[in-house]
Image 1 (cartoon, rainbow, N blue to C red):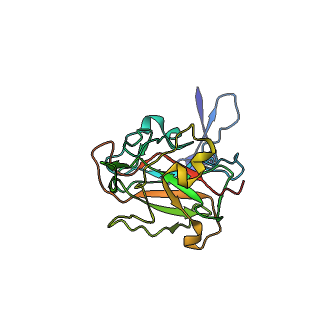
Image 2: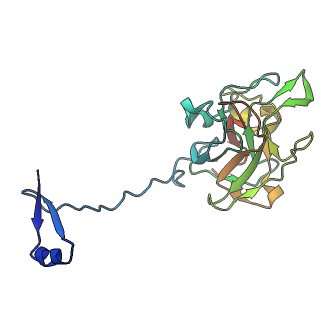
Image 3: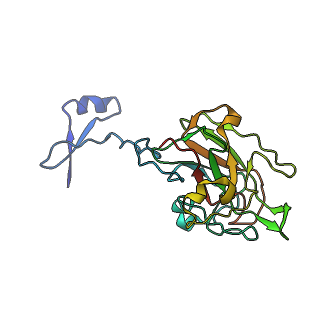
Length: 234
C-alpha cells in the first residue's frame, strides 16, 4: 500500500496550477524514486585472465543476412579454430552478415609485435577443385586497437588474388586438437597479420568487418571461426 502525503505548501502551489507531492510507503521511510543506475560491466576488462584465443566480445554489429551461429554466441567465436581441410569450410562459425563487424579481446592478454606474423584470423574458405587460385571466400577487413576506441586498419587488396591484407581467403587447417600448432601460421592455415606493417608495437583488440556483401539469409558475410595470438604479451 502507498500513502500520498500532501506537503504544507501544496494548497498554495495548487493555486498556481501545480501540486507538489511526496510519495512514501506507509510505515516506511520515503523511497528514492530516481535511484542511481548500476555501472555497466566492462566488456573486456584488462585484469581478466589472459588467453591466446579470443575470449571476450568488445562489440558486435550484425549486418543484413546474419544469424548463423547465434545460438552459440558468443562462445562460438572463442577458443581454437575448427578447420582441418582445404576442401571444405568449418560450420563452427558466426556469420557477420553483409557489412557486419565484430571486435574481440583476449582477456588480460595483448598482441605484441614479434618475429613474423603476430596473430591469425580464421574464417571458413575452401579451394574449388583444389586450385589455390580458386577460393570460395567471403573477405573481411581487419583492424586493431590498443584501447578499443582508436582503430588502425590493414590495407586489404580485395580486387584480385592474392588477397593480401584481407581475412577469409586462406583455408583453415588447425583444429581444437592442434595444440600449439594453432599458433603457427605455417601449419595452422588462416590469415596471418603482422603489426609491423602498421608500425604498431602492441594492441588489445582485433576487429573484423565484412566487405564481401555476399550470401543468403542467415549465412551472409564473413564467417568468423576464431582468432589466435602468435606473439602474446603473456
